[in-house]
Image (cartoon, rainbow, N blue to C red; front, top):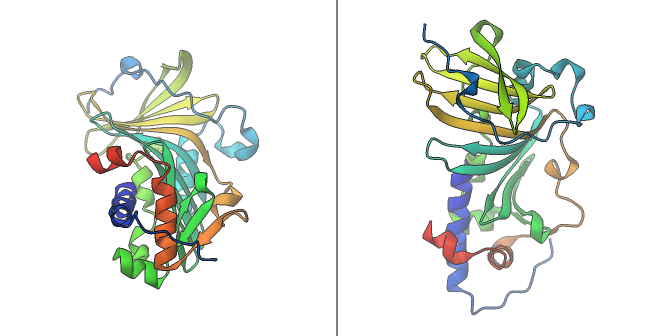
Length: 263
């Protein structure tokens, strides 16, 4: 999903680069489980001390914490790392009637927000949003409904009590944490790491012990931040083709375009 959003942004930025000579006014609007010590977790998460954000029933319960993602109401902040070691920062919020997801492009956050029947591209650093109205979507050749959140992207496998095959200590940023290993029907494994009662990492591990993908968790909660469920009052909202170009030019001025276009 993040790659799709990035592709759309890069496509529109290409258009913006062709028009950089123009000025725009802003319009108003059976296997042996891998040992927990086989790999060292380097991210201690951001959950410690945030007990107020979590229901007491979730404490030291990785299954219950991960079930938040399938509950339809959750906020996640963290990152995903694939088997090639490529890490993608991610931020997601899901709630009845809307969603929010964002990632970084050359150190700058860009996101996508759905509020009821309206869809926006959001640029937090620029305190602005682009309404993906009919004119913008036609120009971008975009159907925003195809960009709705896919919560399965946060699932690395099944985590439930009957699949638990091992519980052991592991290192998390030089601290002892609890690692729980769950065997999958495929023969692979999912490992979760609990730091001070909260889930800090989840890894998908092959039967031979090779880590396939990893999800690092800073925050996973059922409380939705206000700015993830509504466009903040201080944001400027752009719309229409001219507004789209103004929005993209503002974003382009904040990133390394050469690096983006080289990807």
